[in-house]
Length: 592
Image 1 (cartoon, rainbow, N blue to C red):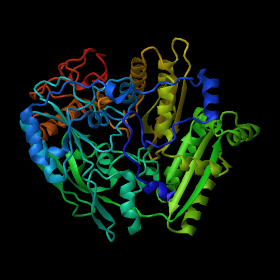
Image 2 (cartoon, rainbow, N blue to C red; image 1 turned 180 degrees about the horizontal axis):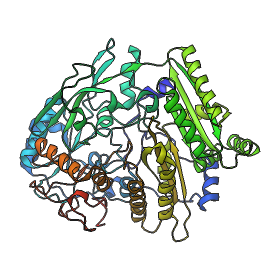
Image 3 (cartoon, rainbow, N blue to C red; image 1 turned 180 degrees about the vertical axis):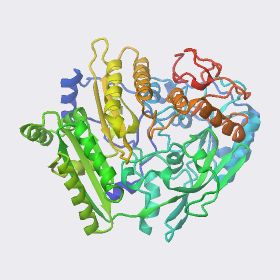
Image 4 (cartoon, one colour; image 1 turned 30 degrees about the vertical axis):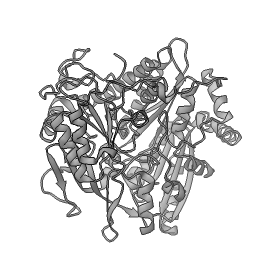
């Protein structure tokens, strides 16, 4: 498995997810499930993405003077505007981003791609963009699934859009193995971070599903969480210093001490800022010993609620250092689907569960990592005792090892289903333990209600994948045949789910970030004063408003670029809300 964590793949295909050479097929068991549950069969002639030459690009708003100024900073060879370069970086990897590209809609593309070579060039590019009023979209691995990399449309006063690709800033600058601190540039991808640390016996311990493509800077700018964050923590929790290049200057937070009481943490103004305030050009984070031992486990529970109660015991009574580094509890629907996909072995496990009286079981998989065999064994035994007392029945550990083997493969299935006119996507939230069951049901019901119209069926499933003493995350996957207007169908699901999350007491995002898709609900969550505080910070760092306009917060009407990214005044919306709750419909959603 260590090889998978350091295996660097080629840059993503322009029309889908990940490695161009990855197998993009579904196993027969998966098609059997789709037929039984949704009435879906594989098409004899699947849909294919349009030819690259047929993708429609927006008219460029960049002036000759603006381009020349950019070239004066990074050189003409690092200012790109050919079709393939623009289209391959058009938007992120959300379902609408990919559907539009498949169907020839490249409106998310920038006018130019700019590739700075160091932090100084980043700062100078931002100064040029502010001077020439060029919008800047910072990009790491391009894996945003919330509209975080979308071209701003008709932002008044802005003249062109530059996508700032940080892939050349891809080095580990320093590592202090005594203090266990490492400093990285933002463009280093997940496998390359691990490849730099492993020879030193260290790891960042961050493995999101986007691990093979996502970058260090993106981890911090979006407050990413990984599959093992229950054990290792989230990267933003480990940041001790950073540098942010902004149009008005450089914010430097030195990693001088392990902790400080010198006022509010300025780090927290940068972490999660999604390129709206500036660009993280380097950061110093705590790193951890590279595990040399690993143990796997799996447990079956009578129900999802019983499994959640067991996880709460692990988090609160055993806590960090004992709880598994990976805790993944599938609800009843996801358990049935996943074991159904596993073919005969999965069917046998479901039959065994039914013989034990578990007709709608919930499956928990666990992974423990460490450097000492006896300590690891003791951790596993303590957890398994607690899980058995909570009603869990031990299952073969191969369930967990099989999940681990395919842990980065999920998004490829979405591409396959897109070809067969099946909508498949994910969304997530988090809440406290006392609210977890109610929110699980409320959001799942909202998704199902939005999809099950006009005779269509839907599969809506959920798992807990990040566990805390106070609560846990909820991660939903939904699958349904496409409607006549798939983008409107997707938006209806998003609207229903996000409303249910906020009304039900969850956070609008636990780790996918805000982007443009979640902006309305994030502003509701922050409240009017919170939004005004964020805007005040943005005005100080980016007074012209060129940094990723419309991401995180709506465009400030007091700046010269005073319209929403969809061309509306940011002070009013179609629903009549005030500026503190701007419209959530995607800025690039074809007039929606």
